[in-house]
Length: 150
Image (cartoon, rainbow, N blue to C red):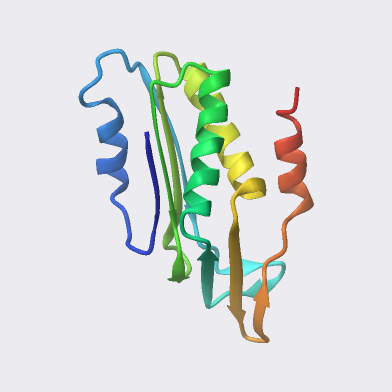
């Protein structure tokens, strides 16, 4: 399991390949790549700056992945989230899950992403033509995470 909070870009192909290269039990890898958008809530976005609490953030991300591992057959997972100042079209997050079967890989990947949006301690600030603004949590993200509650 790889959990990383980093400023540096990551190599999507290398990260996904690392999940299955050495494990012949892997039959599926599902991944999600999140990119910085150039528009949010009708306003142009020049940059997105992300802050976090080192140590606390990684612990929260590891717990989200562990919660997914308890629900589905997850053979391995990678969760990378970037911090610092990013520009539109730059990768910001990667969630990749390896499993023996596609259903587990898809479900665990979606679960991790839904809870990443609602539980991970990141603070986002957008630079727009009208000035800087903090990005609030979205109700749609809360609804997405709520569907996994049992």
